[in-house]
Length: 146
Image 1 (cartoon, rainbow, N blue to C red):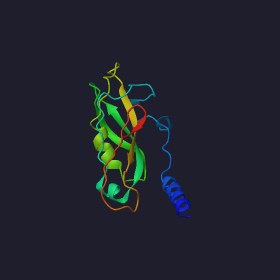
Image 2: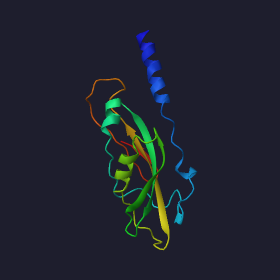
Image 3: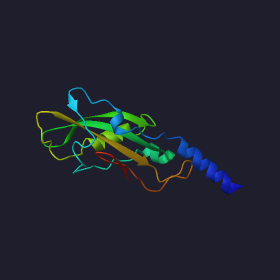
Image 4: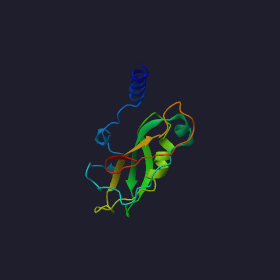
């Protein structure tokens, strides 16, 4: 009976996080060009720090971020397009994404938008005693999690 309860609890926990939307489901930012194959994978991808409160509570989630590439390929003006749970991982995702770099755009006259899905996963199950390790997330030109 305990084993069945554990499976039910795990299923409920997983159901709390909605699947992220496709990166292509958002309109391009004003004055920018976006395409799925625009800029490839990031050359530099800073791992985000898992917020302490999220780690303590055993939270899992994701953030879809968008940025504009500068002439050297660095992300500038990062914003959150969507997140689940809302507001929990946003600042950590923005801080990390602000340090990402892609190949410099071939067409420097256009503003190129890049998007990424940054996943967060606590290594501590909800309700467990504090401790454990941190896992963040990252991804560019697609999605990945750490």
